[in-house]
Figure 1 (tube, one colour):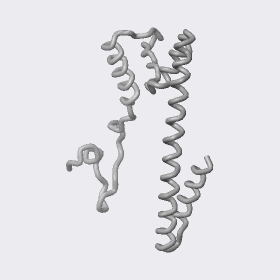
Figure 2: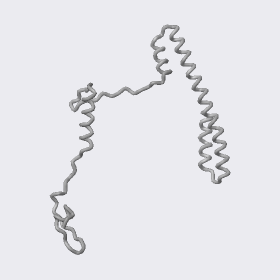
Figure 3: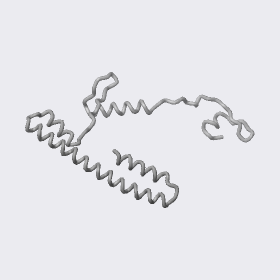
Amino acid sequence: MDKIQEGRNKKAAINTSRTRAEKAKAQAEYTEVNKQVKRSIRTDKRKYVGDLATTAEKAAKEGNMRQLYDTTKKLSGNHRKPERPVKSKEGKVITNIEEQRDRWVEHFKELLNIIRNSYDGLNCKIVHGGQLTDSFEIKTGVR
């Protein structure tokens, strides 16, 4: 964690440098520290994965299937969020894929197709070039 904080400080030094020479020097220092941080992260990750593998081997030897399953799940790295079920308006879970698509279409039609106020019935006159325009001209743009 000290190396990561040092890298952050070096990055801040790049951003606050005033001259090109200072910036080049700070960039070189940051590059070196960043390489060390990445190297450290790689070694830590290798150690972590190795520890998980030994834990899985130990669990397999002992016959502890729960721990074996959990550690292999961590090692695989395949973590997906469970999908949330689609529900109808009545609150019932929809299992059919086509019905789910139809429900999504219905949902977004309701969400995006908002009825806006119409100004067609509004009768008004506008002064244009010193003359009053007719309401027909306002609606259609035709004289």
